[in-house]
Length: 119
Image 1 (tube, rainbow, N blue to C red):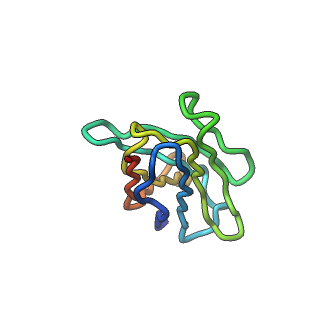
Image 2: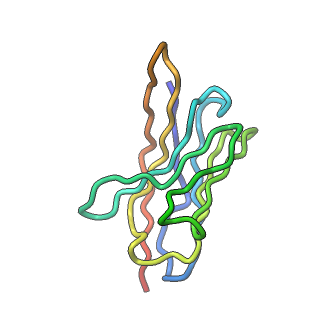
Image 3: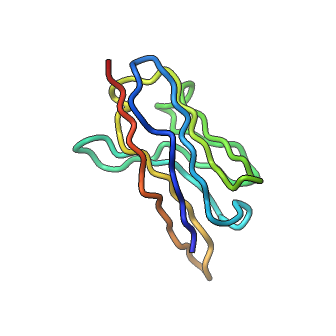
């Protein structure tokens, strides 16, 4: 089992920044991949980006230049740095982990953290 606990969400004005954190209950080195997703109001959940313990974070093209994913492997924590936030970035942000089990994967989700971008 893997527990994921997100934190760092909140209300921010347009143009502002936030850093989300996701603390995993086990070593990141034991996880195949970590990711951030988001679900805007009334829309489907969408991928923000992915990262592994031994490779740089990869953010989807539409968010490159504003969002960055990183890890602190010793704290078992993955971060999402969000800059130049816009109202369309308003969403619940979820942390996700993949762990290898046999020939497949187990999926784990955090509870989500709300990010609201508004003046």
